[in-house]
Every structure is written in C-alpha cells, then in structure tokens.
Amino acid sequence: FPSHEMDMVYHKLFPQHFSLPIHQKLYSGLRALYQQGKPLDIFTVSLYFEEKKEDLKSLIAKCVDGSNLFNTFLVEEYCDEILRYYYARQAIKLGYEIMKEAHNLEHSTTQLSKIIVDKCFNFSNELSLAKKKQSLFTMPELMINTLTHLEDINSGEKAKIVSISTGFSSIDQALNGGIPKSSITAIGARPGDGKTTLGIQIALNVAKQGIPVIFFSLEMTSIQLGIKIIGKEMTDLS
Image (cartoon, rainbow, N blue to C red; front, side):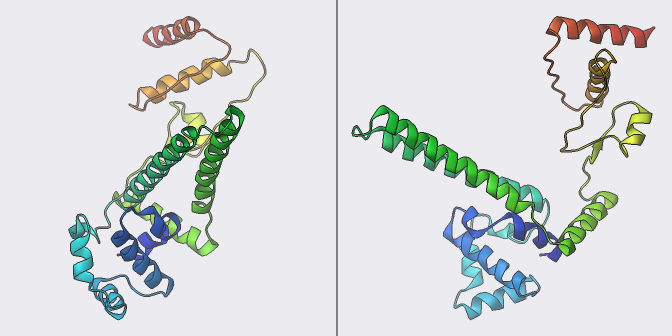
C-alpha cells in the first residue's frame, strides 16, 4: 500500500466509517502502522496482526472481496464510496429514530417538531464537521498530496480536469487555463455591460465540450434566454 495513498486515506477515512467490524479491525491496523511510520506491505501487516494474536489470512477470508484488499487503483474513489455508504446508513438510522419519536404519543406537536429539528441539525452538523476535518492538513502533507496529484495527472494514471475552458483564450489565459474545478467564479461588471450574455456564451462553450451545464437566471425568462442562445448560434453560423 503506497504511503502517498495512505496520506490521503488517513485523513479521509476512520474505522467507524466501515460497516463490518472485521473491516474496522483491518483498517485500524493499517492506521496504527501508518502512525508508527512503518511500511504497509503484506509482511509488516501480517506481523502486526500476529502480535495482536490475529491471523491476517483468516481476517481477509472473512472480508467481502478480500482479494482486492490491497488494490490501490482508484483509492480516492473507493474512499468517497465508503463515506457515501456510511452517511447513507447514518441517514437511515436518523429516519428510524425520528419514526420512533413520532410513535411516542406523549410528545406534543411542538415537542416532536423540536426533536426532529434537533436531530436533523445534529446530523447536518456532523456532515459539515467531517468535511472540515478532511480539509485540514499540515504543510508537509499538503505538499506531498499536491505533488502526488500533479504527478498522477502528468503520468495519465489519474487524469482529471483541473480547469474547464471558457472557450475564450484571453479569459482562459487570465484564469490559468480556465474555470477552476470545484470553485465559484464570479463575473462582475456594471448593469448592461453584458454579464448574462457572456455567461450564456461560456455555458454554451462548456456544453459543447460534453460537460453538463445548468444555467439559472433571476432576470430573464427561459424564452428570453432561448432567444439569446439562438441569436448567438446564428451569429456564429453567419
């Protein structure tokens, strides 16, 4: 298990995120070895569990799809999937708790409403804290993760779009390649200077790259937007 992959996994996943106790035990062992600065190879991991009076082979045999335990391909995607299932289980658990409270006829409508709001707020707060915790890194960890990410992109092993072209070379150049992925980019100008028109043109250019686009407008109706789009396309054809 490459150390640079564990750098990302360690801060993103915790034992409780796994549903099966056997998976929690295996992952806890990997985290313990990582904290000690030891290699995460099969020999070291086996020795660790032997010292804990656990047979690694029997542990893996009890795991679902144990043959892929040390497959590091698409590790980040695996982490996201594990977290998605974890929070889905938590949401289901929350639903059952609310149902249980709803069946308690001793609660008044006001009390039941407060209980539901409090439980939903706590669940939402847990999600927010988890996201903040995943974004906390020391400077060495940040540099390692960044360099590894750039190496993966350069080698093609983990090719990802880091920016989206607007279709305008001058704007792309000013934005160092285009609109940064996972960011909010605002277009600022005085009223009537063409912010919406530019936004429509960028949306069309992005859509032509095969990237899904949603366009919201608080100033124009869908028909008005449609007319602008048709006008833009007709101008390009002429």
